[in-house]
Length: 313
Image (cartoon, rainbow, N blue to C red; front, side):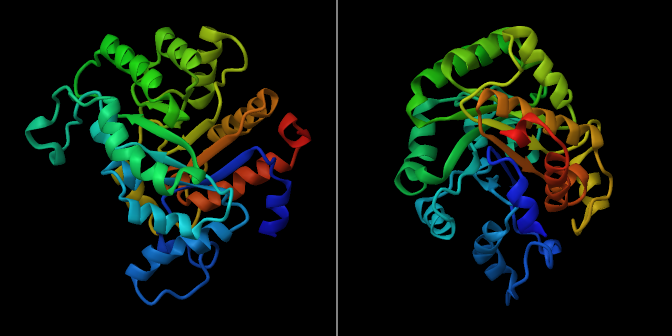
C-alpha cells in the first residue's frame, strides 16, 4: 500500500522526518530487530530510507554541533545514490543572539559574535560535508531562533546579505526565521537577490505557512515561493510548547491531534512549487500532530487523492 501510494506522490515532493531514531515507529517504519538502542541509532537509517514514502530526512543533530567526517561518511554509506537530505547549521553560527537556555550559560541573551560567520561555517560545517556528504545535501537550513529581546533587524539583514554572498559556493541555503519581525521586505529581497529560499516553518511563534507565502507574494510578487530549493519544516502548532507536545504524544506511533489547515497549506505549497518548477522538501516533527511518519502518510493521500497542478506535473 505504501509503495502504491508513494508512486502517486508528485516526484518534486520529498517528504521525511526530523530525525529518525524513534522506537515507537516499529511496525510501520522499522520491522527489523535491533539488539540494542545503540545498534538502532547506528543502523536504522538504512531501513528508514528504504521506506517508499520517506524521500528525505532532516539531520537535526548538526544544530547542536558540527558533525565530524566519520559520522557523515557513515550516513552517506547508508543512503542510496541521489537520496538528498536537509541539514541544519550549527547554532553557534545560526543564532543572532544566544537563546535564553541553560546550555549557553553566561552567554544567554547576549549577541552572538559568530552569527553567520563565513569562516567558522566553512571550517566547522562545510569542510566535512564537502569531503564526505556533498552529493546527499539538498539544502542547509539556517534556523535563527528567537532572541530574548527585540531582534537587531538591521544587523540580521546585513550579516545575512554578506553571508549569502561569501558562502554562495556551499549552498543552497534555506533560512528559517522563528521571529516574524525578521520577515521584512529587505530580508526577502536579500533571499531573492542571493539565490536563497525562505524556509516555511510550522512553528509555535510563526504565522501559518499560507500567511508566510502571502507575505512573500506581497513583497516580491509571484506565487510566494523562492528557489532553487523550497523547504518546509512542520514542527509545532501555534501556541504549543515542545515539552507538552512531547509528553502528550509519546511514543509517537499515531496522529493524536490532526492539523488540517497545516496539511492544506503544504498541499498548496506543493502546487506552487510544481508551477514554479522547484523541488519541495517537507520535514515533519512528531510534535506537529503526534507521529511524523503518519503525518507524511496523510499528506501523501492529500497530494494524490485529487486533481491538482502537482499531480498533473
